[in-house]
Image (tube, rainbow, N blue to C red):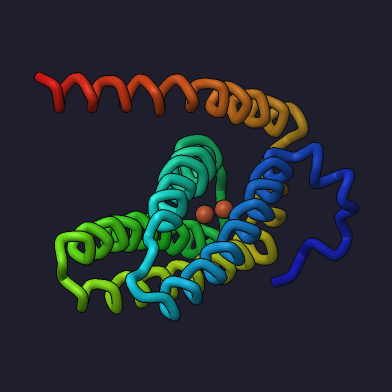
Length: 193
Ligand SMILES: [Fe+2]
Ligand SMILES: [Fe+2]
């Protein structure tokens, strides 16, 4: 069900899926860098794992909290009130499960890095395997949303409802930087306490 052929880019830019698609493009660029870094990690000894921290921060803050957050907390929430087809509901449920899977894999990446730094050499293989799984995951997840989900879903929302959603996306994004650093300070305070 490839329904985007009749939509011009300008039309999509005006929809709530416009910012989500722009975010997809940055995630794709990041994934390319992640692949490059993982190839370097695989070929060098001892492995320099600095990039893993950057990748984890990007995935957790941008891909998960900022991007999946808007999908789940706003778009998917508003879809609940719409008489969606079974097919779209099925895809929505799959997407939620995939977000959970990506969260779990990111946690695995953090654990593997910590184990390697503690001297567990075998954890490097686990880290590379988990990184490769995330690298393989994102493009497929993104294609599912871009090509088979976003546009058919938008048909259920009036122009007014879409504008309201765009405004809520904007407010959601505005809160994030404050949320991130408030949490960091709270974590530091807990650590110091
Ligand atoms: Fe998603
Ligand atoms: Fe997405």
